[in-house]
Image (cartoon, rainbow, N blue to C red):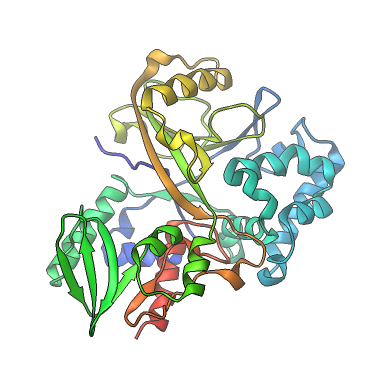
Length: 384
């Protein structure tokens, strides 16, 4: 049985991803569904799947809820993200939603994704998050739906590899690169096993600080920009359970003290029959790069996560867990700091033939598969 290490869904508005899936003859296999959203607040689980349920949310006053809804509506209609990039996200949300709604609702969500990095984050981050969720409605669809491909991204990668191989492309995995430098008229790529290869051009998709480490010959300003990008990492546990939890695809957490920052119940969308009758749940914890949790053993994470899950879902028992796996990534998304687009690393570098393209180049969207494909397609226009 195979499942993705991290949770992914496709939106109806993900036109770039769906185009690639169509080229791979996989788009027709996407399955769509409407999911529910939960919020764990005040030690209780609440459904916030629609406007009426949000109005019933007990942690906020009626005026707070009205201003919260107005904030989302305003953000969905704004188009000038560059202006928002100059405004701290805390100031912007407080002005629109009020201090109480910010403290009780927005701030816990910001901390769950960005940690202390929320203090230097611009309002463009929240704008981009809301824009993605409302993209389908802006194209005339009544509501957004989530889609998934049976078999997950393992099927996408397998089909990609076969299509590329048929076109004469050689895909090599498990070959760590330690150094890239210009040597004469070519780029020399050194591998960890001592092998070196030469190419006319190379595109480095590593996180910015890692790219600065292996790319030699960059201008001092380029190195400074790469090293200056602050990242959030993630520790994500995936669990196969014998029983469902709350039936929400995503449960946001506003209460402090829990060891994970959200609960994603994938089988609220994907039928358990596709996972051997089990229920797939992800427990992500976003952490700053270098956080000790990135090096904590699986047993330590399990002993911390499972009791907290039982607090949230009283019917859950540890003996319902059939599989517990942990994925750790030190650099996932760049913290979208104030005026980030003015300080982001360049795509075309000062080293001839060397290009940089990674999550550090996401400036007016959230990090997701569709955005990665859109970014790659746009970058082709600046690569000769």
